[in-house]
Image (cartoon, rainbow, N blue to C red; front, side, top):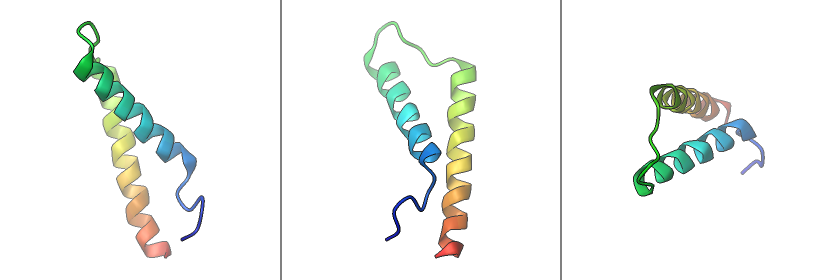
Length: 58
């Protein structure tokens, strides 16, 4: 398997989404705003598109 095959920005986006979800799940005062949710969903869509492209690059 090639290293750095998928750009690091996708890993950072997924890590950020995971952190926000965990914070919202386990913190009484924390909430995810509509803007945060939109960014997370957009990042997820971009990631899925990149993975789809990666299958054809293999």
